[in-house]
Image (cartoon, rainbow, N blue to C red; front, side):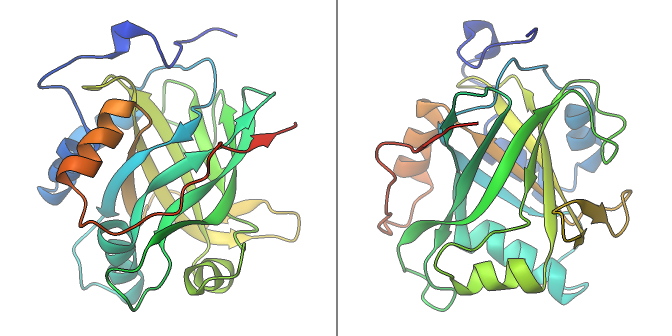
Length: 235
């Protein structure tokens, strides 16, 4: 399997390199062309990332256009902290959870693993035809764990689908992701409402340096339930 390994030191750029927060700043400054260039010219990886990631993101257009856009912004900025990818004996197929606030009404409620997804490393995907690298897709056909209110919304009202690519970053590979809105059929296959229109960008970094920066500089002190050890998936 050709491609970069997540631990390749050549993917770590050091000071001045991309982080999920510099990417979020680019999004806030509406540098969509630069974000799209990163997405279309990513690194081909030889396996899915594994473990906990720091995350940031936001809506792909101005807040206030519609309720979906406002929800995406609230979700990314206030209710979401990143993702967890489970280990797997198949380097291209696994599942995971989102690091989400337990309550949408309590701004200091703890973060818990929820909104489950399956994830796959693909050589290409028709939803992102301009991507030159391979890409990671996340399927939310069956997101329910407890259920939590956010999971109910994802299951019944807001059907999203993610795709992300890796680029060089300060601490190592950082992932630039896009989210599409659409529908899942009974077999779990997703069809985008408009493949040319995304509802949000998100950014993930699975490196310890990013998690440490998140804890030290981007946290409000809310508690978090951790998955320790990270679950393993037999595929």
